[in-house]
Length: 479
Image (cartoon, rainbow, N blue to C red; front, side, top):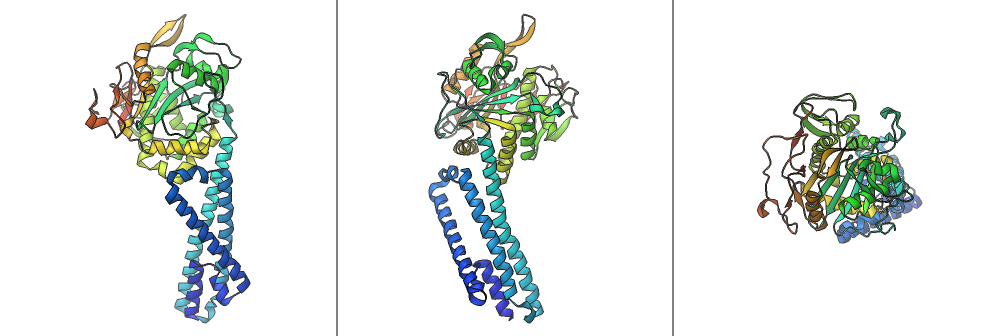
């Protein structure tokens, strides 16, 4: 009887249904055994598809309908396995076995139940949550149009693309942020992502940049206006049109993120480490940090990105530099923790995005998001640059604004148009090198080039910023 108990419980672990065929209800056993064999066949087919198709299979697997099917199959198989496990334990007749066998078989049954059943249910839950997230993302999209007035349509990402990330200061109705006025795009970042040159360049456009803006839908063009008014003029599509007109670059994808999105996404990566040379005490954003190292997430991360009065000049240009300190550390955090290879972390990020972001129709497609994640994963930190669109502060008709330095901006935009990586030669006004300064000046091919990537273009000193592998600190109010 002891041998019988070990065999029956062990068989159920390996081949659910086999114990019932041998010593129980054979009709149920044949059904369970057939289901198990079918399940194994599906698993083998899936593994072969992954081995043969590689990354190309991911967009298919992440279609919501396919994910829901996987969730149902795994859930039903989990239920069947639990039923078989309980019935096998009954068939073992432990009352007639030795004490040692009763203890050992019971432990084996419990461990097997937790591992096998838990894996099936966890897989079912993960597939269902992912499908729900993707469906939610797809239901909250907006079309963006090109210069011809037609919706932008693109195929799979095989070459360089431009993505516009827009930070909306409206608070999306959350009373925690107080009474907000019109929705402004206070943060606008144009991201050039290229799997060809193995580079990413994120260009922050100052909110007070005083430039012409094109017509947006029913809104006529304006001769000069602050750049952050584009969102209130005509929504995300208007910001895309204004950014494209300013930079001369086509923009294929766009995303609009609310305050709560920043909070959720910083939580999803487990916080972002930053350092301060001097303390920040900003009652306007609610940020109070001492000098030294801090790991920021949630509302504190949002306050750090929003703070302006906590910096030495209180200007938006310094805030951009402060944001680059945070974003560079964020990229190092993502790379070091293998976030792009961790399904659970990717799901957490996707949940944050689904709830708090509005994506352009093309960006919301699963194949696009997967392509971007795969492209970003292969790009080294030193080829990821955060730069500030060159401008200089001035006053126009009593307004404090910044005007573009068009000559130096042309150097940056020409490099991006030619799909070249760039390197800055000075940090922004709120950033201070942390530790040994990274060598600057003109890069050498041996130090900076990557296979098929080329040597980065050195930018004029009016274009400040940093690479993602540069560790920097925020200067704070008196730094």
